[in-house]
Image 1 (tube, rainbow, N blue to C red):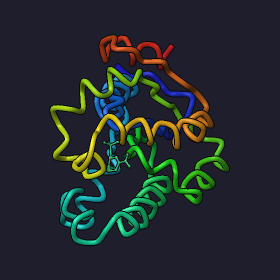
Image 2: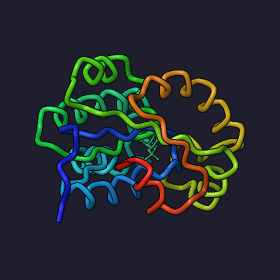
Image 3: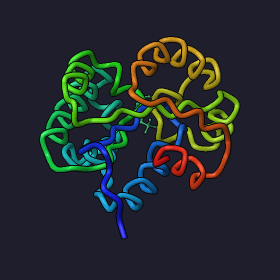
Length: 172
Ligand code: S3P
């Protein structure tokens, strides 16, 4: 059985490792809606992996493509949309979403030690963490992005509780 969500599209934002994909899948199941991951959509559109896109074309190219993919998805059907950690930093992406009353944005705010614990073993798929000190990079990204993430309609402080609990916090 599924429950009708109070919004057409739920957009999950937050840093890498926050659990947007995992939690998004749970929410999609709860609401009986499709789950869409923008990184996966970009990889399909480009026929390259995220690390390949960064290596072959650079971050600016990735960001432009990310914006186009999100614009297309926002014009599609109801869904739960997990975005890449940097997607919300694109001014036009934010503008598109802010002017829509049928979209609910949710920031998954997860403590830094929890993020680092999740990401340190799995840096290969994240080009921004592949070089240098990942903890320092993540701290810098948090400082730059948290003021913007705070514009979300709903902020969920996730801690390191289970995904199931996180999903319940959101649906309630
Ligand atoms: C990025 C996050 C990644 C991916 C790309 C850039 C970022 O997505 O889009 O590596 O700028 O924070 P996840 O947040 O799903 O890891």
